[in-house]
Amino acid sequence: MPISPYEQTGFYDTATAAGRHRAIVGGRWDETGRVAMTALIDAGLAPHHCLLDVGAGALRLGCKAVPYLQQGNYWATDASLALMRAGYEAELDDPARLDPAQLIEDADFAFPGVPDRITHAIAFAVFPHLPRGKLDLALTRLHRFTRLEKFLFTVFLAPDAETAAGPYRQADGVVTHGQRAPYHLLSGDIEDMAQSSEWHLSRSTQMLPRGQILFIAEPSR
Image (cartoon, rainbow, N blue to C red; front, side, top):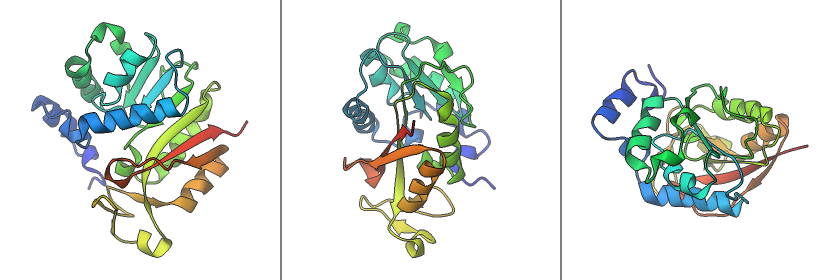
């Protein structure tokens, strides 16, 4: 049985065929895209930088990042190419600014075909839908980008190990879980993952939609 609705057979095809490409990436379309873009700019993203949008979905962030960045500097990965293409066709004001070849299907954080010149990466509202091991995998595999300055990602947190074992109601009302989506993690576990994969981690105080927490990881080099 799938541990996430995104793993159900035909989930993406059914949703995109029904024109629901916005709805299946979590709602709050414009607000969430603006928050993610602001977080990147606050973290130093400038138009000349090269961004990797991990778990880009229907380009909720991409429709804002593409016009901000110099042409060719936005790359996106997602488990569903169809979902990214739906966003490409429906959400970009100027599709000519983004080569569709820069939308890459990737469910394993292998980043095939993504150039080494990536300087910033973000996974916004991605890991709440995936089991803990996926964050660990992403932190490890992102090291192949030797020019990467910062990796921004969001998670839900549980306050302690006892609470983490069961459901927990976040400040914004979302109920998260330890063993099924939407997932929560412990802050200490995230710090351990970052340390073991050689990242320096900081936690943002920015308020995010649905009570998610933003972490900023910088390579320990």
